[in-house]
Length: 148
Image (cartoon, rainbow, N blue to C red):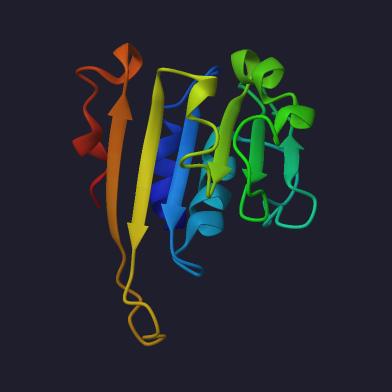
């Protein structure tokens, strides 16, 4: 998952919104850790479950990474309004775990990453990942390059 995040980071630029979906323990935060490495941001990328959002500034000239965990947020974009994601989005890569049904209104152009693993089987480390680009930004994008 971490390696996939590093490969995905090569496709991302400021203004990109990425929504991560998957069961608990599927690898959403691990993928985001790889994104952070690929984007070259400062700070350890860890789950922002209790702080809701963390900003990781770029160590170079790339965009910062805004990492959001919407797991504990029951409402949609209104409940997330205090995070000012709409203000951060143009100059950042914004990654939202558990964001489906909550933040799609932020951008017509967004990427959805769905991660599936066998629930309850802690011995199965295999993940099945589907990456879908939505909107003009991702029309014609070669997402097949993300394959291992």
